[in-house]
Image (cartoon, rainbow, N blue to C red; front, side, top):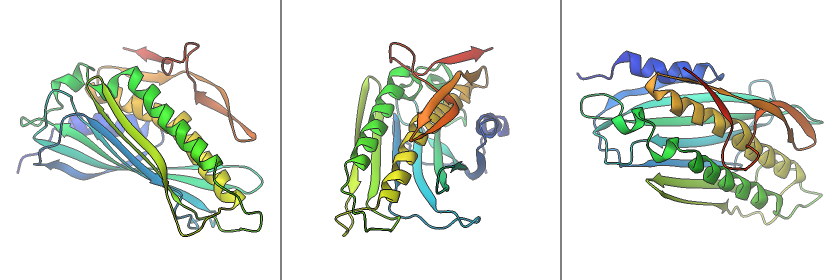
Length: 253
């Protein structure tokens, strides 16, 4: 049975582990034709269960396909990735990311050369500015939901974000999948807003760093600066540069 080089998987998992993500191999190699380009699909907010510590947990289910733009790949590596982050406020809660990371693999069981050269759409700075704008739109959508002061449920409509990146083209949409409830609670808005901000300021930059390390040739370090999350100051968050053109990184060879 064919398999991908363990070194290639180690590179990805080491990059994830360096940023606090637990990952496991769902499929070391699966012979499918993965379409050209990269995609991101994310949904959260429709369910807020209690976690192991009894805290409300906003679960962010995400699928990310990483592939070159020049053509389909003959197969893929599939990793299951998880990370939990606690938001401390008057009523603490957890944000749990459950990510299915699909990485395109060529017929010779190597990462496509376009990814290795850093030339695919998912590796370009402007793609992350676009993805960040989708998350900003999602945040605006959440905060525009009608709040009922008597409502106390944590669940509400699902927030859905989808993006497709291919060459110089970026297509995406964000919005809500309506539930029978016409209104939401203030806690739901607070939790969903924090999820948008965590994705925008932490998860997206960390994912970008992991993708940069697919070649195993460089180590990307995020430059940190204090930022705001709701009414709470969060330290060590990546930031946009002064021109708003992309996230600022230092690369160490």
